[in-house]
Length: 109
Image (cartoon, rainbow, N blue to C red):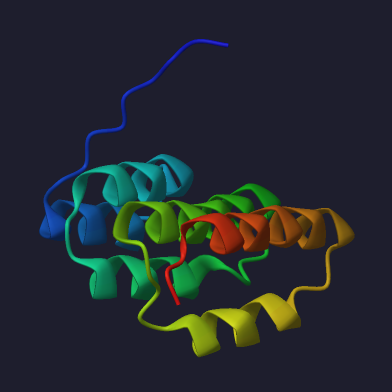
């Protein structure tokens, strides 16, 4: 496995790439690592949690955990929990379990 640096720090560029449906996973990861607007990031991830593509959904779910780690809170936790409850894929339910473990560690509430 090789390290890749996904450096997406311009919201307009991110939205354009997502509109074209290009590199969605990389864009989500890069946005979470480079954008300092928590509300915007949470909404971005919420949009993709229930995506039909397993990889995209997985990236969005794990990115919610990253947001919790970075900011120490979640502004839309109830909505995030609602989306998590709607996930049907058993493999993604494991990802959610993993992310909820992150919540216990990183959330201050």
